[in-house]
Image: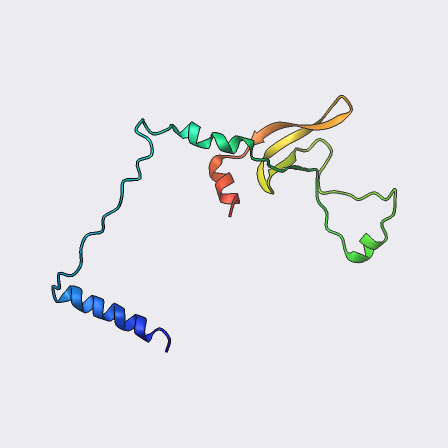
Length: 128
């Protein structure tokens, strides 16, 4: 086997340590230092994350459809969703559920008013 010389080397090292052989020595590492001042606070360490772009998606509703029905869709077809009008919509950040909200219109543009943010424990659970 290709691992036999390596296994033998480990076996020899184990025997040497058991027999009290004093050929080992403590490892020494150079001081990394770098700054003599106090350690930066947590917020300073996380400031670089504030400019990371995230994808925000609002899901109006879903439906299940068989392929035959999907192939019959044309311009003007209506697809029924699983949500009633006025029901809260889900807000996702990077495909992870953040909370719920209501659809609003501002200056002829759609928006979402956040009405509920799921708990931090639930967000962590949804990350997996």
